[in-house]
Length: 376
Image 1 (cartoon, rainbow, N blue to C red):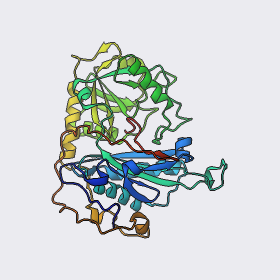
Image 2 (cartoon, rainbow, N blue to C red):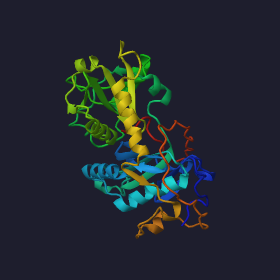
Image 3 (cartoon, helix red, strand yellow):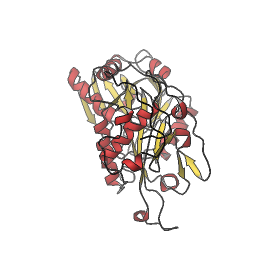
Image 4 (cartoon, helix red, strand yellow):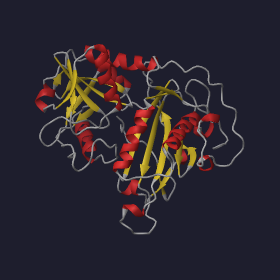
């Protein structure tokens, strides 16, 4: 079973050959990221009619993979999306993308697009052939590592969050008009990123991350307008383990502005402390003690192998076998033998943000690329 004639790269996070920039699954085939394209008439592109999820790999181990697959399945069900691949096949695709790339620390995306209508010009969603898209690329931090170390400078945007009744925030999607507007506003004022409130003035989330605040030692995260983040869930579990009082609750803007500490959470970055909110300096203009304690515990869970799923070696990345094997295995010369799996790597405290290869678009297709900061 082969994909391009190139096996995974050397241990330590490097990849060789055509998959050096990452590996993608699109159109039922595995291809290098630079060759991953979509038709320009795909509704995932023209209408943002797509749901997605992102899981990360640290030290050659997925973190909470089954939780991400659970959420992805729920999102597809809510949007009535049904790709040909079942859950086992989707999981196998993710493993193979990582194995092909040779990456030890990776950002791994799965998406299901509505696709194109079988009848030209049809406006009926049921007329479309839904399809799975997946890829593994080098690690991404939605807030750069150096900014996390000094503490992010956060801006409360004037752009309100889209109402929950219009766009369900618990379904990861690419409808980012409000979030992008918040980012433009924050960057225009010289801040690193934005936090959005709803029309009633309650805190929701930011572009690709959940929001937490600390007040008098108590940790709070919004109960509305936000994704039920896997990293958010992990932080709440860590708080319980460490005996830190935590709650999911309504957070008026005024309460956030009076916080002792603020931090954000996402799959693409983990626990990311803030140091400023608008013109207000939090603490001593550095990440606060509770934020740092939770960040350290989060990465320690990775080192300890909690919720870990080792990446399958290339020759096993499509197990369990099934009728989709042929679609997942384009013809070609035999694969190079994969390196011996060995014991799972110890996770690094925080992978750095290596560059991502720029996809090469080819008409009439649209090149795939991760939305900036799109993962919680």
